[in-house]
Image (cartoon, rainbow, N blue to C red):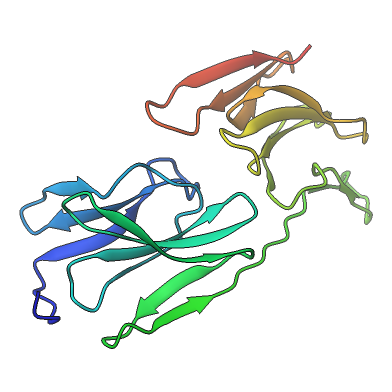
Length: 198
């Protein structure tokens, strides 16, 4: 490569599951041809072309840290950087210097009763907990622990009782009678799961 961008390809993080950063670095040509540069990785957040334009550099999360790898369309891959903290690759300069940042997130799942000014934290004591559903009567919430591989689906009473793990996947909805929780698997092929809650 000449080091000059040709403008005929786009590198992007292909995230097949909505609101999930599991994905594969991918190249897209002007003709619409997609080339994944290896298997999907957790926490794929930053992506940039190398100075030569021959590789795609990308950052992703590993257990307990972050890694920045370089991948090329021929399938070769090498590690450029590892870190014990989270990181995101923002850009790469023409001389090879990389702009890398550190991210930290803190999530809370809080529930409050109608008319109450107080709220109760019903998360899973982890910073990767999300909730997308509450039962029609307001007595249950669905929780997803995104800190574990494949995700774990939980049901929890809004009165503060301990959460109950019901299976794998991203918890999406609670059945109207509260007896089942609907989840979706994290990795393709996507499967819709119905977990009993009792």
